[in-house]
Image (tube, one colour):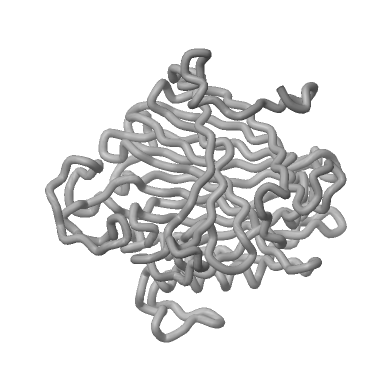
Length: 352
């Protein structure tokens, strides 16, 4: 899910931990496509990835390493056994790790991809029909330096063009964020808690006028599911930020991103043979210009129907999403039926 918000707004989200994706059978008894249905496993698997507007890294933030990180652990005899070290999370271009290729070692874009695969190998859990790795917290910077010529447009490379359509304060506007990690810890009350947070404003504190993101997860040992709380604040320099909690494919291109990925979907669901269940509690909205994508389902195929192969000039990402914002005037109305869903489903009413 993503949030697109305006300057000086803050969006705390609370995602209650009963994310469940049923695939293959239309009934509630179908097999789950995700590795941890309902997020009920005490041993959490969660990762972080940062992208710029072109779905690349571009350049690492100073002293932050490559914008990929993970918090994966098992619970054993009342202790958390972490699978990923902070040294792993701080790996950056030029620093070797098991499996990194020579071509990727000094390329920030390729390095991040192979770092994600490496972190996935540390977090991986064997399962049927495929192993799975982690839930993914994805953070994306909506700034685009139109003078850079970095991003293709409508499947074609484009030269630099005049600013106007996209926000950018100047050179460096597409930077990666400062990232801090609070490794999951177990307190004396049996509560496990951890998180990621940071800012895109590289030379500022995280005060009220700077950008800020935060994701905190929490669960009581042996009870319920993981609760993910999201906060996102934009700033004058970074007016368009996106924060997602993703269930990616465990292998292959994830929603059109043109690199091999790791994630939670051990079975790829095919429409219409799946259902998604989750709970969302919006604690504070961001005003009429903010967006909550509930839910954002992404896939990828070429215009001739062929599968995507990583060629950004011919791969086309497809999205099915619903934008939820109580402060935005409804497009659906009795006089505009064309903008209404075909039907509604509630917990007490199957369809109306």
